[in-house]
Length: 323
Image (tube, rainbow, N blue to C red; front, side, top):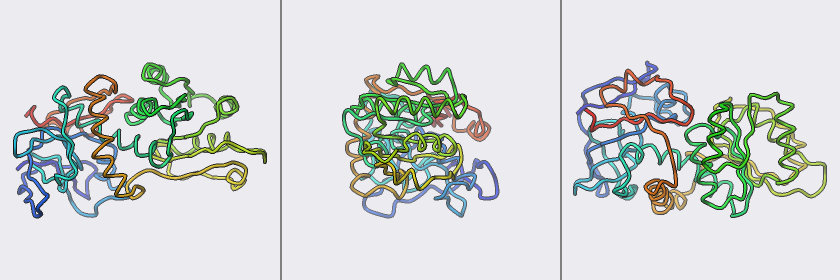
């Protein structure tokens, strides 16, 4: 079968003819792949920069939209790499897709939902009425996070980003207030403090880390009086993997800092992702309640398009039925 295979010595994968995978367990199924999103996770693993990176060559892709042996359509997490004509999935980790939802949208949505909902619901434990700050909301996952935060009951969603046009468009997706990270550090900090003083941030979902995270944490710093509880969740590090954190900040406020990603969730939470969170998100997308922007790319074209620059908030999706 044809597959997109990552090579540990190269920055982009190869298009190769390899043996098709074989189901080895009772719950495994061999499926026909119809669409696979090209995520930042896939690109990081392919380039060897992700913390969970495989040390050997591997078929790119960890999930897909596929056709099951009975002819029905589902989203599934792969037991084998999924950017191939066929893949092995675990039937306990798949979700049926509404008929109204197209393959490309169904393939692109789950990774963003995982990157948003798991942090919002389980790491931040967001409650209805909470004020949520999303740092780096103009990216694909950040845009979904804005929509899900409102769906889960946030009373106010404040967003940051560098793309002014994309920031404005977030107001149409549910954001209540925007902060441009193109401004000076002093102005950004003052704006954060001004908002936090009136409507304290209960939840921070951070896709950037780095310098903007330092400004947010400084904004939360207290003066020794009682303070509202803030749950700060790191989901990404697009602006750098490290920052300097003052111990005084941790002592001066009721602050919890955690991460959301592979290894940070429980088995029970991942099960709810499959049985509840993703089905809800698919239904929302089918009804137009979640809006995303995808760029379909044919299977034979993805190597050439691998390094394609996509606009803020867009995602490439390999669509197999375009072959």
